[in-house]
Image 1 (cartoon, rainbow, N blue to C red):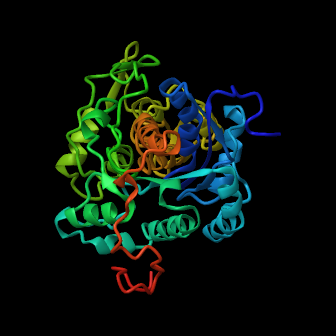
Image 2 (spheres, rainbow, N blue to C red):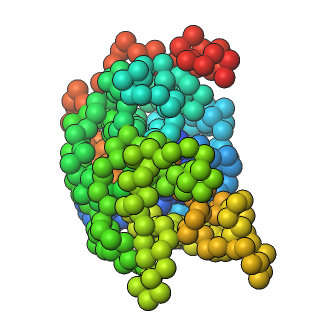
Length: 407
Protein backbone atom coordinates (compact mmCIF):
# COMPACT_ATOMS: atom_id res chain seq x y z
CA UNK A 1 0.00 0.00 0.00
CA UNK A 2 1.34 3.44 -0.91
CA UNK A 3 2.23 5.71 1.99
CA UNK A 4 0.71 8.62 0.11
CA UNK A 5 -2.62 7.04 -0.80
CA UNK A 6 -5.56 9.33 -0.12
CA UNK A 7 -3.47 12.40 0.71
CA UNK A 8 -4.50 15.88 -0.41
CA UNK A 9 -2.65 16.64 -3.69
CA UNK A 10 -1.96 20.27 -2.74
CA UNK A 11 -0.17 19.34 0.49
CA UNK A 12 3.60 18.98 0.60
CA UNK A 13 4.32 15.31 1.22
CA UNK A 14 7.32 14.74 3.45
CA UNK A 15 8.71 11.23 3.08
CA UNK A 16 10.48 10.70 6.38
CA UNK A 17 12.66 7.97 7.85
CA UNK A 18 13.21 8.33 11.60
CA UNK A 19 16.01 6.45 13.38
CA UNK A 20 15.75 6.45 17.18
CA UNK A 21 18.80 5.48 19.23
CA UNK A 22 19.41 5.23 22.99
CA UNK A 23 16.99 5.68 25.87
CA UNK A 24 14.02 3.38 26.46
CA UNK A 25 11.85 2.06 23.69
CA UNK A 26 8.39 2.71 25.18
CA UNK A 27 8.77 6.51 25.48
CA UNK A 28 10.33 6.55 22.02
CA UNK A 29 7.35 4.79 20.45
CA UNK A 30 4.97 7.19 22.17
CA UNK A 31 6.89 10.21 20.90
CA UNK A 32 6.64 8.86 17.37
CA UNK A 33 2.91 8.36 17.89
CA UNK A 34 2.46 11.99 18.95
CA UNK A 35 4.82 13.65 16.47
CA UNK A 36 2.61 13.44 13.35
CA UNK A 37 -0.35 14.71 15.36
CA UNK A 38 1.58 17.72 16.62
CA UNK A 39 3.04 18.43 13.17
CA UNK A 40 -0.42 18.31 11.57
CA UNK A 41 -1.49 21.08 13.96
CA UNK A 42 1.64 23.17 13.37
CA UNK A 43 1.89 22.67 9.62
CA UNK A 44 -1.42 22.07 7.89
CA UNK A 45 0.45 22.47 4.59
CA UNK A 46 2.57 19.37 5.23
CA UNK A 47 1.63 15.70 5.36
CA UNK A 48 4.22 13.31 6.77
CA UNK A 49 4.48 9.97 4.97
CA UNK A 50 6.31 8.06 7.68
CA UNK A 51 8.43 5.06 6.85
CA UNK A 52 8.60 2.36 9.55
CA UNK A 53 10.64 3.81 12.40
CA UNK A 54 13.91 2.15 13.38
CA UNK A 55 14.43 1.75 17.14
CA UNK A 56 17.85 0.99 18.64
CA UNK A 57 17.28 1.68 22.34
CA UNK A 58 19.44 0.94 25.38
CA UNK A 59 17.17 -1.88 26.52
CA UNK A 60 17.74 -5.22 24.82
CA UNK A 61 15.08 -6.54 22.47
CA UNK A 62 13.95 -2.94 22.11
CA UNK A 63 12.83 -3.28 18.51
CA UNK A 64 10.65 -6.25 19.37
CA UNK A 65 9.13 -4.40 22.34
CA UNK A 66 8.47 -1.46 20.03
CA UNK A 67 6.40 -3.67 17.76
CA UNK A 68 4.36 -4.92 20.71
CA UNK A 69 3.64 -1.41 21.97
CA UNK A 70 2.87 -0.10 18.49
CA UNK A 71 -0.11 -2.46 18.31
CA UNK A 72 -1.68 -0.47 21.14
CA UNK A 73 -1.13 2.75 19.20
CA UNK A 74 -3.06 1.89 16.05
CA UNK A 75 -0.01 0.12 14.62
CA UNK A 76 2.51 2.93 14.49
CA UNK A 77 4.88 1.53 11.83
CA UNK A 78 7.99 -0.16 13.28
CA UNK A 79 10.89 -1.56 11.29
CA UNK A 80 11.34 -5.04 12.77
CA UNK A 81 14.18 -5.98 10.42
CA UNK A 82 16.66 -3.43 11.77
CA UNK A 83 17.30 -4.23 15.44
CA UNK A 84 21.09 -3.81 15.60
CA UNK A 85 23.64 -1.27 14.43
CA UNK A 86 25.20 -3.62 11.85
CA UNK A 87 21.71 -4.10 10.43
CA UNK A 88 21.28 -0.31 10.37
CA UNK A 89 24.43 0.16 8.27
CA UNK A 90 23.25 -2.51 5.86
CA UNK A 91 19.80 -0.87 5.68
CA UNK A 92 21.29 2.53 4.86
CA UNK A 93 23.57 1.03 2.20
CA UNK A 94 20.64 -0.77 0.60
CA UNK A 95 18.27 2.21 0.67
CA UNK A 96 20.37 5.30 -0.07
CA UNK A 97 19.50 5.22 -3.76
CA UNK A 98 15.78 4.77 -3.12
CA UNK A 99 15.91 7.65 -0.62
CA UNK A 100 17.36 9.82 -3.37
CA UNK A 101 14.81 8.64 -5.92
CA UNK A 102 11.84 9.32 -3.60
CA UNK A 103 13.32 12.44 -1.97
CA UNK A 104 13.09 10.75 1.43
CA UNK A 105 14.50 12.74 4.34
CA UNK A 106 16.01 11.24 7.49
CA UNK A 107 15.82 12.31 11.12
CA UNK A 108 18.15 10.79 13.72
CA UNK A 109 16.80 11.09 17.28
CA UNK A 110 19.42 10.22 19.90
CA UNK A 111 18.80 9.97 23.64
CA UNK A 112 21.89 9.88 25.84
CA UNK A 113 20.29 9.10 29.18
CA UNK A 114 21.06 10.69 32.50
CA UNK A 115 22.79 7.56 33.75
CA UNK A 116 24.83 6.90 30.61
CA UNK A 117 27.85 8.92 31.69
CA UNK A 118 30.25 7.50 34.30
CA UNK A 119 29.36 8.33 37.90
CA UNK A 120 31.80 11.06 38.84
CA UNK A 121 31.60 14.73 39.87
CA UNK A 122 30.76 16.99 36.95
CA UNK A 123 33.86 19.03 37.74
CA UNK A 124 36.07 16.05 36.86
CA UNK A 125 34.04 14.83 33.87
CA UNK A 126 36.02 14.97 30.63
CA UNK A 127 34.87 14.34 27.08
CA UNK A 128 36.33 10.84 27.47
CA UNK A 129 33.10 9.99 29.31
CA UNK A 130 31.44 9.80 25.88
CA UNK A 131 33.68 6.83 25.04
CA UNK A 132 32.64 4.76 28.07
CA UNK A 133 30.64 1.57 27.44
CA UNK A 134 27.21 3.03 28.20
CA UNK A 135 27.71 6.08 25.96
CA UNK A 136 29.91 4.97 23.07
CA UNK A 137 26.96 4.04 20.85
CA UNK A 138 26.75 7.73 19.97
CA UNK A 139 29.85 7.33 17.79
CA UNK A 140 28.15 4.55 15.86
CA UNK A 141 25.19 6.85 15.23
CA UNK A 142 27.51 9.70 14.21
CA UNK A 143 29.18 7.36 11.72
CA UNK A 144 25.84 6.21 10.32
CA UNK A 145 24.74 9.81 9.83
CA UNK A 146 28.03 10.71 8.12
CA UNK A 147 27.78 7.78 5.72
CA UNK A 148 24.16 8.59 4.87
CA UNK A 149 24.93 12.27 4.33
CA UNK A 150 27.76 11.33 2.01
CA UNK A 151 25.14 9.73 -0.24
CA UNK A 152 22.21 12.10 0.27
CA UNK A 153 23.78 15.46 1.09
CA UNK A 154 23.97 17.26 4.41
CA UNK A 155 20.63 19.05 4.07
CA UNK A 156 18.69 15.80 3.70
CA UNK A 157 19.66 14.39 7.09
CA UNK A 158 18.51 16.10 10.30
CA UNK A 159 19.79 15.22 13.76
CA UNK A 160 18.31 15.74 17.22
CA UNK A 161 20.23 14.69 20.33
CA UNK A 162 19.24 14.76 23.99
CA UNK A 163 21.93 14.68 26.65
CA UNK A 164 22.11 14.91 30.46
CA UNK A 165 21.68 18.40 31.87
CA UNK A 166 24.33 17.66 34.52
CA UNK A 167 27.15 17.40 31.95
CA UNK A 168 30.49 19.15 32.19
CA UNK A 169 31.49 21.95 29.84
CA UNK A 170 33.81 19.54 28.00
CA UNK A 171 31.02 17.01 27.41
CA UNK A 172 28.61 19.73 26.28
CA UNK A 173 31.20 21.07 23.85
CA UNK A 174 31.90 17.61 22.43
CA UNK A 175 28.21 16.80 21.99
CA UNK A 176 27.72 20.15 20.26
CA UNK A 177 30.65 19.50 17.93
CA UNK A 178 29.33 16.07 16.95
CA UNK A 179 25.57 16.66 16.92
CA UNK A 180 25.01 20.36 16.30
CA UNK A 181 24.41 23.51 18.29
CA UNK A 182 22.74 23.41 21.69
CA UNK A 183 19.23 24.83 21.84
CA UNK A 184 18.18 27.26 24.53
CA UNK A 185 15.11 25.37 25.64
CA UNK A 186 15.50 24.87 29.38
CA UNK A 187 13.01 27.62 30.27
CA UNK A 188 10.34 25.82 28.28
CA UNK A 189 11.25 22.30 29.38
CA UNK A 190 10.83 23.04 33.08
CA UNK A 191 7.25 24.17 32.48
CA UNK A 192 6.11 20.58 32.08
CA UNK A 193 7.55 19.00 35.20
CA UNK A 194 9.84 19.75 38.13
CA UNK A 195 10.62 16.07 38.65
CA UNK A 196 11.45 14.54 35.25
CA UNK A 197 15.05 14.81 34.06
CA UNK A 198 15.82 17.93 32.04
CA UNK A 199 17.82 17.34 28.84
CA UNK A 200 20.33 19.33 26.92
CA UNK A 201 19.13 19.54 23.32
CA UNK A 202 21.42 19.63 20.26
CA UNK A 203 20.27 19.82 16.66
CA UNK A 204 21.10 20.05 12.99
CA UNK A 205 19.67 22.15 11.45
CA UNK A 206 20.62 24.79 13.96
CA UNK A 207 18.56 27.83 14.85
CA UNK A 208 15.51 25.87 16.00
CA UNK A 209 12.93 27.55 18.22
CA UNK A 210 11.33 25.14 20.69
CA UNK A 211 7.74 26.01 21.56
CA UNK A 212 5.43 24.37 24.07
CA UNK A 213 3.10 22.41 21.81
CA UNK A 214 1.59 19.85 24.19
CA UNK A 215 -0.98 20.34 26.91
CA UNK A 216 -0.13 19.06 30.37
CA UNK A 217 -3.04 19.83 32.62
CA UNK A 218 -2.51 17.28 35.40
CA UNK A 219 1.15 17.73 36.34
CA UNK A 220 0.53 20.09 39.24
CA UNK A 221 -2.34 18.13 40.79
CA UNK A 222 -1.70 16.97 44.36
CA UNK A 223 -4.05 13.97 44.47
CA UNK A 224 -4.11 10.65 42.64
CA UNK A 225 -6.45 7.71 43.27
CA UNK A 226 -7.17 8.76 46.84
CA UNK A 227 -3.55 9.53 47.68
CA UNK A 228 -2.26 13.04 48.34
CA UNK A 229 1.17 14.59 48.26
CA UNK A 230 1.95 17.54 50.51
CA UNK A 231 3.10 19.90 47.76
CA UNK A 232 4.14 19.78 44.13
CA UNK A 233 7.81 18.71 44.15
CA UNK A 234 10.26 21.36 43.05
CA UNK A 235 13.38 20.71 41.05
CA UNK A 236 15.86 21.05 43.92
CA UNK A 237 17.82 17.93 43.02
CA UNK A 238 19.73 18.97 39.91
CA UNK A 239 22.45 16.48 39.14
CA UNK A 240 20.70 13.49 40.70
CA UNK A 241 21.79 10.40 38.75
CA UNK A 242 20.22 8.64 37.01
CA UNK A 243 17.08 10.47 38.14
CA UNK A 244 14.64 11.14 40.96
CA UNK A 245 12.57 7.97 40.44
CA UNK A 246 15.59 5.68 40.67
CA UNK A 247 17.06 7.54 43.63
CA UNK A 248 13.75 7.22 45.49
CA UNK A 249 13.88 3.43 45.00
CA UNK A 250 17.50 3.09 46.04
CA UNK A 251 17.16 5.47 49.02
CA UNK A 252 14.27 3.43 50.41
CA UNK A 253 16.34 0.26 50.13
CA UNK A 254 19.32 1.95 51.79
CA UNK A 255 17.09 3.20 54.58
CA UNK A 256 15.45 -0.20 55.05
CA UNK A 257 18.70 -2.12 55.42
CA UNK A 258 20.55 0.74 57.15
CA UNK A 259 23.45 0.31 54.76
CA UNK A 260 24.71 3.82 55.41
CA UNK A 261 23.49 7.26 56.33
CA UNK A 262 21.32 8.84 53.66
CA UNK A 263 22.70 11.86 51.84
CA UNK A 264 20.97 15.21 52.22
CA UNK A 265 19.58 14.82 48.70
CA UNK A 266 18.18 11.35 49.38
CA UNK A 267 16.59 12.58 52.59
CA UNK A 268 15.01 15.53 50.77
CA UNK A 269 13.62 13.26 48.04
CA UNK A 270 12.09 10.85 50.56
CA UNK A 271 10.50 13.75 52.40
CA UNK A 272 9.13 15.39 49.24
CA UNK A 273 7.71 12.18 47.74
CA UNK A 274 5.76 10.88 50.75
CA UNK A 275 2.04 10.49 50.13
CA UNK A 276 -0.86 9.80 52.47
CA UNK A 277 -4.26 8.23 51.85
CA UNK A 278 -7.11 10.68 52.24
CA UNK A 279 -9.36 8.13 54.01
CA UNK A 280 -7.06 5.86 56.01
CA UNK A 281 -4.12 8.17 56.62
CA UNK A 282 -1.71 5.42 55.54
CA UNK A 283 1.68 6.76 54.44
CA UNK A 284 3.63 5.45 51.46
CA UNK A 285 5.94 6.84 48.80
CA UNK A 286 4.94 7.93 45.30
CA UNK A 287 3.95 4.98 43.13
CA UNK A 288 4.83 4.59 39.47
CA UNK A 289 1.55 6.34 38.58
CA UNK A 290 2.84 9.62 40.00
CA UNK A 291 5.94 9.34 37.83
CA UNK A 292 3.82 8.55 34.79
CA UNK A 293 2.06 11.85 35.44
CA UNK A 294 5.30 13.80 35.93
CA UNK A 295 6.89 12.31 32.79
CA UNK A 296 3.81 13.03 30.62
CA UNK A 297 2.66 9.40 30.23
CA UNK A 298 -0.47 9.39 32.39
CA UNK A 299 -3.08 9.37 29.61
CA UNK A 300 -1.14 7.23 27.16
CA UNK A 301 -1.01 3.44 26.59
CA UNK A 302 2.34 3.24 28.44
CA UNK A 303 0.95 2.57 31.95
CA UNK A 304 -1.15 -0.34 30.67
CA UNK A 305 1.76 -1.65 28.60
CA UNK A 306 4.10 -1.63 31.60
CA UNK A 307 1.44 -3.14 33.86
CA UNK A 308 1.29 -6.04 31.41
CA UNK A 309 5.05 -6.43 30.94
CA UNK A 310 6.29 -5.30 34.38
CA UNK A 311 3.26 -5.59 36.70
CA UNK A 312 3.41 -4.13 40.19
CA UNK A 313 3.40 -6.89 42.82
CA UNK A 314 1.06 -4.83 45.08
CA UNK A 315 2.04 -6.87 48.18
CA UNK A 316 5.69 -7.80 48.64
CA UNK A 317 8.18 -9.48 50.95
CA UNK A 318 9.99 -6.39 52.14
CA UNK A 319 13.49 -7.84 52.42
CA UNK A 320 13.48 -9.11 48.84
CA UNK A 321 11.02 -6.88 46.98
CA UNK A 322 9.50 -10.01 45.44
CA UNK A 323 5.73 -10.69 45.29
CA UNK A 324 4.33 -12.02 48.56
CA UNK A 325 2.50 -15.36 48.55
CA UNK A 326 -1.26 -15.12 49.25
CA UNK A 327 -2.04 -14.56 52.93
CA UNK A 328 1.63 -14.08 53.84
CA UNK A 329 1.76 -12.50 57.31
CA UNK A 330 5.00 -10.63 56.61
CA UNK A 331 3.73 -8.95 53.41
CA UNK A 332 3.72 -5.17 53.07
CA UNK A 333 2.32 -2.93 50.31
CA UNK A 334 4.64 -1.90 47.51
CA UNK A 335 5.82 1.63 48.23
CA UNK A 336 5.48 1.58 52.01
CA UNK A 337 8.99 0.54 53.01
CA UNK A 338 10.36 -0.20 49.56
CA UNK A 339 9.11 -0.85 46.03
CA UNK A 340 8.67 -4.19 44.36
CA UNK A 341 11.32 -5.23 41.87
CA UNK A 342 9.08 -4.44 38.89
CA UNK A 343 8.41 -0.89 40.09
CA UNK A 344 12.12 -0.37 40.65
CA UNK A 345 12.70 -1.44 37.03
CA UNK A 346 9.99 0.95 35.83
CA UNK A 347 11.63 3.80 37.73
CA UNK A 348 14.95 3.00 36.05
CA UNK A 349 13.23 2.87 32.66
CA UNK A 350 11.70 6.31 33.13
CA UNK A 351 15.01 7.79 34.26
CA UNK A 352 16.67 6.65 31.02
CA UNK A 353 14.65 9.27 29.18
CA UNK A 354 13.13 12.71 29.47
CA UNK A 355 9.67 14.20 29.66
CA UNK A 356 7.57 12.93 26.75
CA UNK A 357 6.31 16.36 25.75
CA UNK A 358 9.82 17.82 25.90
CA UNK A 359 10.99 15.25 23.37
CA UNK A 360 8.01 15.78 21.06
CA UNK A 361 8.34 19.58 21.19
CA UNK A 362 12.01 19.37 20.23
CA UNK A 363 11.31 16.94 17.39
CA UNK A 364 8.62 19.25 16.05
CA UNK A 365 11.00 22.22 16.28
CA UNK A 366 13.68 20.43 14.27
CA UNK A 367 11.25 19.31 11.58
CA UNK A 368 9.72 22.77 11.36
CA UNK A 369 13.18 24.27 10.84
CA UNK A 370 14.15 21.56 8.36
CA UNK A 371 11.04 22.26 6.30
CA UNK A 372 12.44 25.69 5.49
CA UNK A 373 14.83 23.76 3.27
CA UNK A 374 12.89 20.61 2.50
CA UNK A 375 9.67 22.36 1.47
CA UNK A 376 10.56 25.98 0.84
CA UNK A 377 13.96 25.34 -0.73
CA UNK A 378 15.83 27.96 1.27
CA UNK A 379 19.58 27.47 1.50
CA UNK A 380 21.29 28.33 4.77
CA UNK A 381 24.24 27.53 6.99
CA UNK A 382 21.93 25.77 9.44
CA UNK A 383 23.01 22.41 8.00
CA UNK A 384 26.75 22.88 8.47
CA UNK A 385 28.54 20.43 10.76
CA UNK A 386 31.82 20.82 12.59
CA UNK A 387 34.38 19.65 10.02
CA UNK A 388 37.06 18.89 12.63
CA UNK A 389 35.17 16.06 14.35
CA UNK A 390 36.05 12.53 13.26
CA UNK A 391 32.59 11.07 12.79
CA UNK A 392 33.87 7.72 11.56
CA UNK A 393 35.60 7.08 14.89
CA UNK A 394 35.47 3.35 15.73
CA UNK A 395 34.84 3.41 19.48
CA UNK A 396 35.08 0.23 21.52
CA UNK A 397 36.60 -1.37 24.61
CA UNK A 398 40.15 -0.75 23.36
CA UNK A 399 39.49 2.85 22.26
CA UNK A 400 42.33 5.09 23.41
CA UNK A 401 39.78 7.57 24.76
CA UNK A 402 37.85 4.98 26.78
CA UNK A 403 38.25 5.95 30.45
CA UNK A 404 37.84 2.28 31.43
CA UNK A 405 40.16 0.47 29.07
CA UNK A 406 38.99 -3.01 28.12
CA UNK A 407 35.36 -2.44 29.13
